Image (cartoon, rainbow, N blue to C red):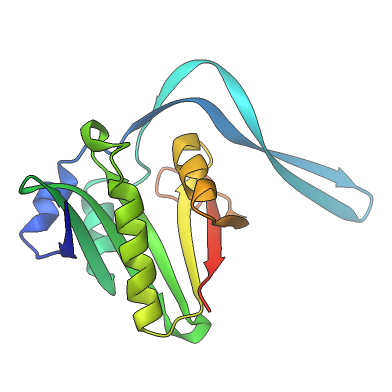
Length: 176
């Protein structure tokens, strides 16, 4: 496997990847209002059956996100693009923000996502950034578990964040 900087010719290959996941769990958001306070809780909830979760961005929305990147890394497996990480540098917050981290469904569980995440960390450290943040959907439980297992912790959410109106949750890690 090779991780390298993407070229514009890789965009179409990345677009063709199967970004969907199957899951039996989601992170359910519960909002409780009491007098002058509001409590928001996220908790794993088991679904009645396995469901397919589509990626929250597609087509022009993905391309627009990729065009705003500070770094766009692709993973090659046997000379095929099988995954990518789209990273923005938020200079004022000294943060690397991974908006898209995707591995083709047929190549998951082979260390490709971990290699992309590690390459993004190295990219951020090389720029002397202090924080790494990754976004994902509350419906993408496999991604949530992936990030938690790699030491990132929940650090926030944004309701109706994605073009499809899904909730985004954010996981972060201090780099220095």
